[in-house]
Length: 211
Image (cartoon, rainbow, N blue to C red; front, side, top):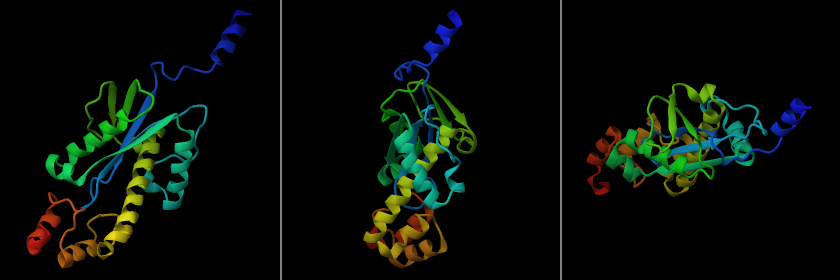
């Protein structure tokens, strides 16, 4: 009878504010020449598994969108944060990325006991943290964070494309493609571009009126 009572006790809903929650963290937008860098933090609910989580770069845009909705609906909590273009230019892209990650973790409704971060660098956090190289492919919570961050940034690119159609943000997502570089040479940078990135700085010198 004791063992039966013990098994029954394990099925009682857990106190999710208790220590033991693990958050996954990832970013999107370190490489582009424009726009914010985005980070997301996710604590998954083991009672509501989400099928198909993997590195966001290996998913189609449609699949990412569907998983984005599933993660928001089923995760225990999630948070998306940014570091602005101004912060990227002032701090450098690495420090701005770590700042966005820190903001994402701080934005979680439930405090995690441990944070798993994709890559080999960690933001300053109040709890235990571990860097996991290739974590977006092997840790479901990090995969979920990578999807949230990627979709959020892609949506931002689609929105600003209407305001700055000459740069083609919706197509290249801010990356330094041949089309984007040609647009920079022709039009100079806009307020969304990262002036600390070499191609943007070069284009700004050609268009001092945009500096």
